[in-house]
Image (cartoon, rainbow, N blue to C red; front, side, top):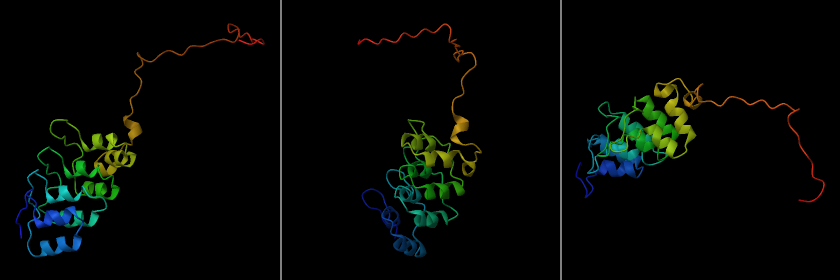
Length: 172
């Protein structure tokens, strides 16, 4: 039931990767372990979120109360971070509803799920990560840099009397 292939994946992990929901449900019903990790340290949830439109599989994994929604792989990547690659807003919201921590930083780079969303130029992801579902009450505009009063250039007023414009009717 929980035999592993050359990458350390169980049949349930393979089903999650290939969106084989009926197979995954049957494996879980027969006692497959939902908490295994492969050689890369990816949990079955972390594997499932890397496949777009895999919400039902994620719901199956999150339906087990022992599932750790913030479990990182060997690189420190959480399921929420990995989910940014699919740009699947439904899956992101599902993870946040189960208390996925958007502030965990991956090893080496220190990037968070928000960094990954910004790098993909995915505004919907940025919105949901900074919104109320993620524990914030702000929109991205609240986080935009504000000019410092000492560094801002002072406005220059130009009067019309000091401006002289000469029209050249010849050709240059």
